[in-house]
Length: 394
Image (cartoon, rainbow, N blue to C red; front, side, top):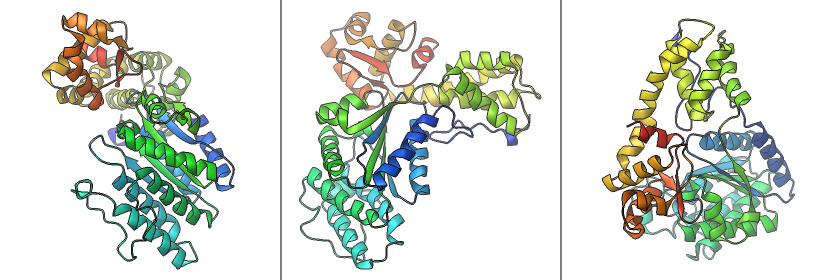
């Protein structure tokens, strides 16, 4: 098989050639965009799921829908060590640029840019350190608007003015936030509060967040009404029919087919997790001698795919952990021998013959690094599918 024609794309956040299994989310977001632009009440959206299930891909696809409808859009990738204020300023700046050139009132555009500059200048030098971005330089900062230093109030005033600018054109503003669970709790509460007020105003602005499975819990903890503020979408592995589609459709466009036994084995190996679907598809294509791709081709390629995942997808994450954190994860893997589901923290302590309190630093470090999450009190689970299997195989 010609590797140059290989259609599969196992990259981080890289859109696969066939975005299978996400039609419902895309269709619903089209409705959301229409309703918001028409002044109808609608909730923002939150995507949650394990790593490798395609949250970032879906987030980018939703942003693409907004762009095609001429909305102003900006994207943020949250980080646990960085304040939200500067990334929001950058994202809003990008969104304003996308609508400003179509606006017929340059004074109105400058007024909004002045509010954005005032908001951005409220950042500390520490927050701006190492960033190449600067707020708009060709307008003066507006005084008394989005510059109070209270993040929730400043976000509300900024969002209100930016949404109004887009509304003049009959469109809206979309802010897309990846790794949303990494926003500091106080700032997450401020973002929720601003979104709540914006939704009550009916202003044309939506926030679409993506994060790990515990993101809905973190949002609910930040504001009691967050459970009603967002439409929550659980992004999971693909059902069998959709996984087959993800393999078959791109191959068919290159004149290549799969035998049914090959698809059966591929699904057994990948469990339908989108990143694995792409990773195995790419390696199997390169190993196959021709069409149709057979179960023998899959058997030959599987060790290569596992080795590649072991170095990049799994290994790189394992190497980030300290020795104590690796011991903790290994205990989780041993206790979850039948799968990668949640395990009780008390069971981990018993397994390691340690007091639960002494393991708190290791557990907290793994949560901060995004290697495990706590969906409910007293339990932890891996954020990466098949990670327990990887550790048990070491």
